[in-house]
Image 1: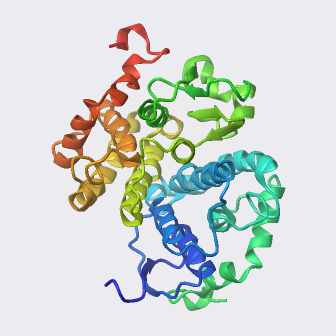
Image 2 (image 1 turned 120 degrees about the vertical axis):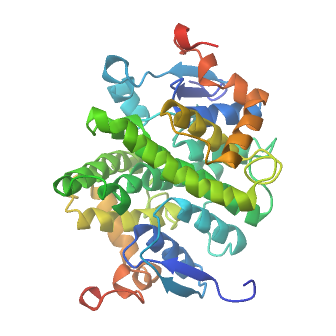
Length: 189
Length: 217
């Protein structure tokens, strides 16, 4: 309903949900969570983040400069189209159980290898320059996935550094999978 | 390439991601140079050192424009939209824009990556077709439902948007993978309407510099 609080259908562990939770936290938008683990993961979360950006523009999640925006979109899409869909649950379920880990690790390493290279040209304190952007919202949850799949992050120092810097920010903390309404007790922070 | 030169598009005739960008360039009347990148020949030209330096993701399309190099088709299209805003590819209304982004992302994240060459190569040959068909049907089932609420003449309302640029190449992929499109009448109708437009014709895989003779229109 139009006048009520926004309602987010979210799964605590879903990297796609986490991206949106970070955006809502950064923009100080109060919302209601309906926990669900029936979400079909997909990049539609970028559509949500873009809508939030256009209707609640402060603070900015996209730079004003079109070239910097292009880098933000490029990095965001690299993660949400190039990495995450290949390692999400609905894909892994279609493979033999013993192939899950290598498959996911390959998808993530491949993508992180490319991302690490791109960051050489775009990163400042964060993925693109020195302000938090949509690219950073995509990065942190993907690094969490990488850790869950036991991907060695040593080859990706820029990704690691930026991830660490971002995790110290309140919006990334409060939205963390370990602090959600549906976080199981044994995983709760 | 010099800053004052034409934009350069690294494209494969058959790549649906490349086709999306070709449509955008055609709609916006942007003159550009194509550097064909064959994804199969020589083990895949996208794996060459030179191409990797250009796009570390080793994927097409890549656009060199205004002194920058952009990978990821939606990032390219958004940049074109912001710097060459006529004609519009995104509605002004934020809610309609959200629908355009939603549909575009459903296709470019939810369907295409699951059925692209690099993924299929990792599966057993005999599993390729069922896998690709499942990815596409799954996505099209969702999309057909979404279109009930958003479509007019095109995916969102009555103007061509970025969602339409994503739809047509994905339908072409569906046809290549022999997906039965009968369950998706809205998708079929909109696809047919779009294919009649010049920008979708001139950018078609059958009319590219690298289209093999036997597939040329």
